[in-house]
Length: 143
Image 1: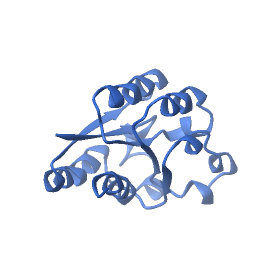
Image 2: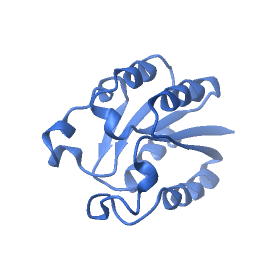
Image 3: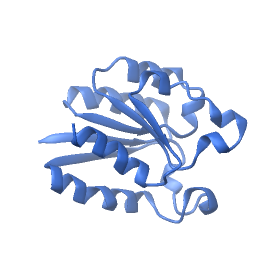
Image 4: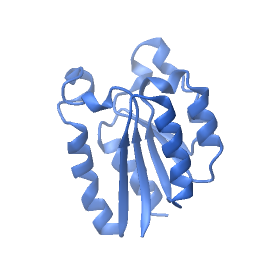
């Protein structure tokens, strides 16, 4: 069965509580429920991970390749802007990675405009809320 890893970084466990005017009122569990039917439609399993710790995210990126995932949907949170360790983990695997952000990071604070990770990903989806995750998953599933 095909696998897609959905990896969420720091503070995304606080969705629904954290700045709902920016990130919406839905929770990370709501995100998982939204993607499950897609898995049924395409014969795919989603592996959901979330951590506030950089090392866990790196381990899961490596695991995605070891488990022969067809793709990784990655929201690195604030690590986007400075984690060369996560960037190097993405660059080290053959599994395609799409970077996703719930808000439009380019219309927010200046420090959010730069991603050290996006140059080694297949692409970046920003500003579409949870639908951005679905867009990324479909990019892998409809190939």
